[in-house]
Image (cartoon, rainbow, N blue to C red; front, side, top):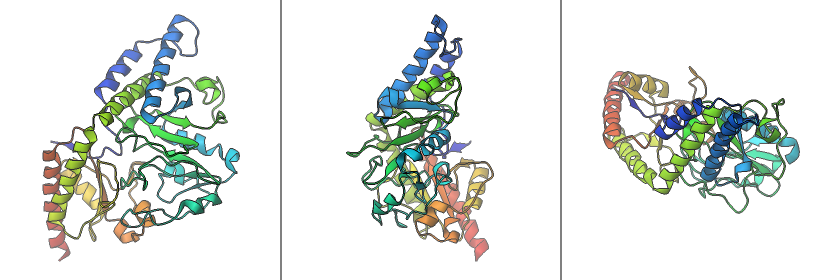
Length: 365
């Protein structure tokens, strides 16, 4: 029996999203057409836009649909000329933002995930990427709010992991942009959104038909947007109902079981605010890649870092930025659970992990 424990990489498709997508498949109109069939397609897109807006706490017109959070990030970074001309990402950011960075910025968290430096240094850049929740460690910003633009700089806030797991809350000053993706909240793969909080429409990267109110050309992914919207509505209802509190309890049970089997294991961010479903732990001397493969053979899907591209396993740059050395960072795995994960699931995982760890110790002796 397979047990899926890699929800931060992608989530199972929600039933609500599946139904919405099936219904959208029967809508034949192009949403840019003015006839009845086109208007029916347009209504689906606008319903999805309103549903995503409600989840993230913005106005519907501020939602720009894209093919992914990665495209949304690129579109946001492309606006840097309006924000001083220099873009920088914290060293713990996802590669979709980090690979665009033009400056080296300090890490805002230490090994334990605690805040360690002021954001004052961010004024070196005009536009800065600061995630609301780290995808590898689950560590939240110290005030559990979406990163707002500060004095002297504007922000792109990655809310991909936060949205749908916790309330999306803003400080007194909102970010300039936020990015998120449907497949992290139970929607389909291949659709994301840029949330534009600025007063100006972004300068488009894709030009042509002028879709998305002239902000992102190309016929909209009608079926994907229908699923995105339905998933957003369902995810928001789950957050309101407090369902993720139960998930956090199951995550804690997992960590206690792992700790009992290997006291030397380090749980990154355990003492600070984290996503309720995420456990990143380092077991010195046992490579994360090996752990992932062994657990896969045992029937459990986990990961060794952020999911970006297939076959790419390296020492976590996030953990290195937080102060772990390369050897330690290479010994980390991430277990990320979902609403359907049971206590029995995580205890079976812990038992299988402990058995593999015991064999590892015997070989290393």
